Image 1 (cartoon, rainbow, N blue to C red):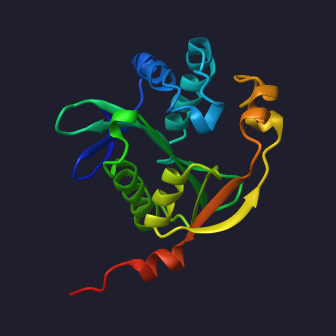
Image 2: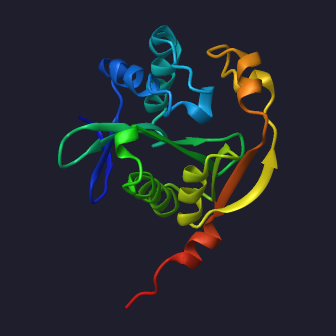
Length: 199
């Protein structure tokens, strides 16, 4: 098992081709997918053909950025995943997470995200972290705020963007999400100001 990092309660490790079933199960929960696809599951063939191969390619680049399976230390259970991937802007990465419903409300999203942000700024030379979600996803927005991220813009995704490259029906996606998306960000200087003073 290739461990990327550990927190008090989590192990974040690389995905392997054998993890397809874990992703299929995660995305089969309508509540998990509520703000992503309007509750539609991700088709297995899309995970096998497109999603998993794309995630595995991140590791080949050797830049310590990509997608990471979240494993609960105590039980060894798969809780979901985090991503920490480059954007089109130099020095900027996008943070994201998707967790099983059984893991909600327990601080795992905040714990895993904080560890990734700290690693990014301390070890990887990251200058800015961004994250986005649908306006009504209060739980995800609360995580971003706990991380010290601030709301920087509100935007509307096109039906094509909502359809995630053909995986979901764009007409359905547009109907399911009539509102806007919100983006949060944390710059290195703001992260440094939030760090505790040395004793």
